[in-house]
Structure formats: structure tokens, C-alpha cells
Image 1 (cartoon, rainbow, N blue to C red):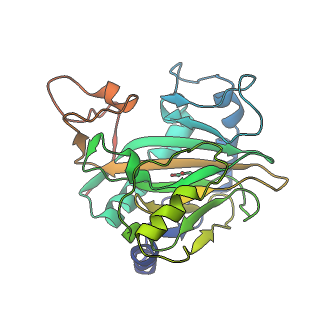
Image 2: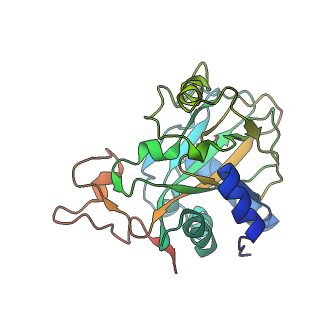
Length: 269
Ligand SMILES: O=C(O)CCC(=O)C(=O)O
């Protein structure tokens, strides 16, 4: 089922830097997505290709950290069918004023009970390898989310703050809010308005690349699983000199153009 943004949702996004859209995935798609987590994290890749980043492996890594894979779409057709949706591309392009949207990377996030936080950050801080260095994200939950169960949390209005450098510790930091507090001070904000997202499975949140966000420990009894489509402008090019150790591997020598095979366009107006 495809979604289209309402004027109210566009207005909320412009004010807050994020907006919830319900029912982006139906129950069957939620179930199909959940079923891919065990095989992906244990290294069973449907297409035979490894994802670009595979940060947690069954049997290798500690049980108490949040599990993440980047670019699972290359390994798994079910994940591809979610993160490469044209309606996601259209919403992202509309909200950031781009001519279209292409996938930058996906994230598969698995936060079982007892797992540690991901540090609060701005996505655009990690995009100096592309021009323009802008991201727009569609975060989709496969589980009902609760504030005490490690849901994603956003700082309302922080898309209007300056761009900060990458945070000091992204995975399992002692204080997930450490860099956020510094950024708030720099933006002259006394008390950041942190909003935990409580929604039902299949819901999405669209967030601006400068909106501060992260997730704390899962202190509940249920897992929190998400599939995330990080988009960039369809007109984005590789930066001439800045290199991402993982993603600039897809740059051809004589050009800064993006290759459709690795960063497909989801939608163009
Ligand atoms: O799901 C999470 O815990 C964080 C995801 C995130 O950082 C993102 O979607 O940009």
C-alpha cells in the first residue's frame, strides 16, 4: 500500500523536523520483514551478496548491544521491497525539496530486551562524501514501540540547529545524550524537547538529516525491530575528495556520478 503526505504532515515536518505516518506497511509486510532478521544477522544472504556493513553477527558479538546492518537490500529481496519503494522516495524528495530521491543506504536495527543505546546524532554529519551532504530518512518500525523499549526519539525543532561533527560514540555509549547536550548549548537551547515515538508496527517516521535523534536501552520485554530507508537527492554526486571508507568504493574513477546499480533512484518528479 502506497502512502502520500497530507498538507498537515508536511507542516508538522517543517515545524518539528520529523513526522509520523501510520500504516506504511500492512500486517503481511511487517511479518515478512520480521522473518528476515534472524537469517540476515546470522549471515544467510538470499541474493548471495553481503550487506555493506554487518555490525552484529550471531555467535560473534555480545548480546547486550543494538544490532545493525547497512544495505541489507543488496542481500535480501524482502528488505529491498520495503526500502526501495517509490512512495518513500517521493515523500523524502518532497520534504527536502529535491528533484527526486535515491537510496543512500538502508539500516536494519534490532534491539532485543536488555540492549544498549545508540547515541543521539544528526544523519547529515556523516554525509561529507556526497554533494549536497543531505539525507532524509524514512524509519519504519516492525514492532509496536514504547518509550521504555528503546524506541527512536527525536529532538523537536533541532533540524534548524547548526550541523555538528559526527558524535564521539555511536554504538552503546555510556551517555547517549552527551553530544546532544553540547549541540543544544551551541544552539542556545536550554532544555531540548525530546520526543519518544510510540506507534504501532507498520508505522513510519520521516526525519530531516539534521534532526537530532537516537534510541536508549530497551528496558521492556519485547524486541524493537526497524527497517530504515536513508535517502539522498536524486541529483547527489560523490564528493571530489572526501571519502567514505565503505560507500566511496562505488565511485568510478573518472566521474562523480552515482551509479544506478548501487544507489538506485526511488522516485523522480
Ligand atoms: O532505530 C534507531 O534506534 C536509530 C535509527 C537511526 O539512527 C536512524 O534511522 O537514523
